[in-house]
Image 1 (tube, one colour):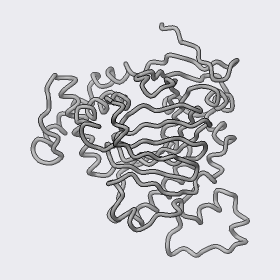
Image 2 (cartoon, rainbow, N blue to C red):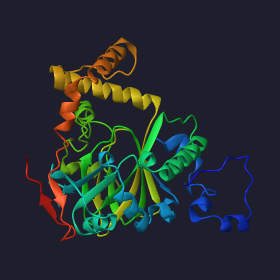
Image 3 (cartoon, helix red, strand yellow):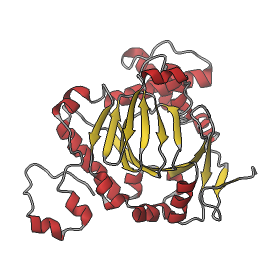
Image 4 (cartoon, rainbow, N blue to C red):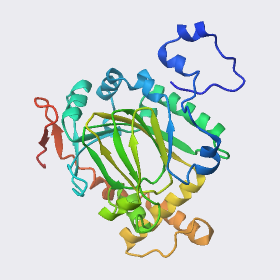
Length: 337
């Protein structure tokens, strides 16, 4: 775990630290190594911020530990996708399974394919990652004035050399920590035409974050980072982005969090999305206060309990392939029942 010590705790002696196991020893160090006042007081949430971190040094992210984690990971908390080879291969994004393979076989398949494994809710599945995450947010609360997270969770992304994530948007606060490999990140303005209210609403309802229109000329306005182990990036809410892996296996930690203002924005995305998809109504407001907001919040609270939303999202969760154990990286189509 990587928990930040309280300010009033005593600093252990050098000998005491050496007697600890590697994870416990890292608890005596901050996760972020170059977090400055300007990052927390002026830039956080307003601009993409690139920082340095220590997580890539943690035994929690060794290949052996990740392979062991994969072997016991609950099926409901992971997704593995196959994707196209080019940026404009829009919607070539198929979901699969790796049932029966060892953790090392899964990592080997990813190393040799065009795959993207997302181990969601790692902080819930394994308490070690939960302790790490709690320490991270304790540290952030001490660095960012007024920062308070209503909830936070983390996932582990393992992806192939040359793999990509299409132009998409995330609906919660986000941080990405690079652990292994190199990739290119492109962030776009969180404003029209790069992202629209309708795209946010459709994403909220479908949970398909790549269902966002993209044009090549958007890249002229992107902020680009060459991302390496030991680097972390945080970007503004609703800023679209895409990812291009370089020629190496990639491991990243993704962190999602929610504040009270983010929660209100998400309620509007869900409620407006339901008005469009369920009732054919075009919303005219994205206000997060006042009578309109509370009416939509009430409508959504009632609608989320119906079978309509479950059926809508289930249609996007079809398993289309299985990893081939005999040829690492090859996928086998699953025959529809």
